[in-house]
Image (cartoon, rainbow, N blue to C red; front, side, top):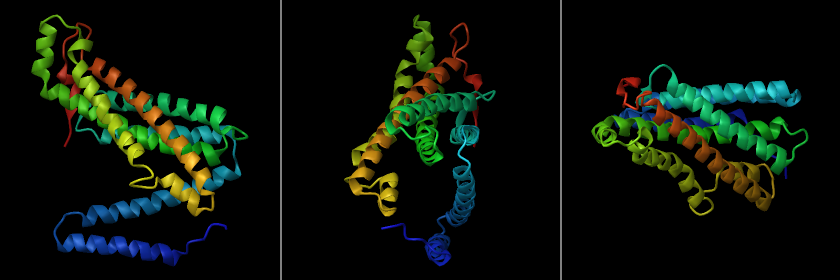
Length: 266
């Protein structure tokens, strides 16, 4: 069975449900009506635009175009990492660390999957490369943002503990090690929870989409398992890279804690 096409009316009815929720939120003074409507409009515009971009990209599946879109995705994901942090490193370091960590982990894991596991022909076929990278970036972005937020917040709140350990002769790495490990764990919790609940509490999005498009359920399951393992690896390694270099940035060459390298945002 082929894909059942959705009409504009179908989407309008779904949008009406969001509108009803916004109205209910407004009547109850929840403060979610405006953000919900804006988010719905952004979703519609952004997904429509990416649909047009992917349609053109699929028609011209050349490596330079695929790489260009992938780089844009990484750069935008880096911006989201910074936006989600209350205390961020000054001088653009939060953006640099987040973007670099995502580039290293997501591109490496995506490349491995495309070249070794999926064996698409050509290997950069956008039908596989772009959705795979998008899922990896989305989850890696969340993990890195959570871990860096936890790291900078812990360094700020527990600066007395860190400085006391430095006074006792510990290196910067040892002094901030407990906070660094806690931050890494925080970044990995979402993907661990997702894997633990997959198939029992929820049906993951990619698997559901493939089944709706007519893919045999067991084939969709295999792809979903592959994707979740890749996401776990990409998130884990990306989080480790970002946290380690982020922690190092909090100290100067004389191994003194430098909280002036943090900027608090509202």
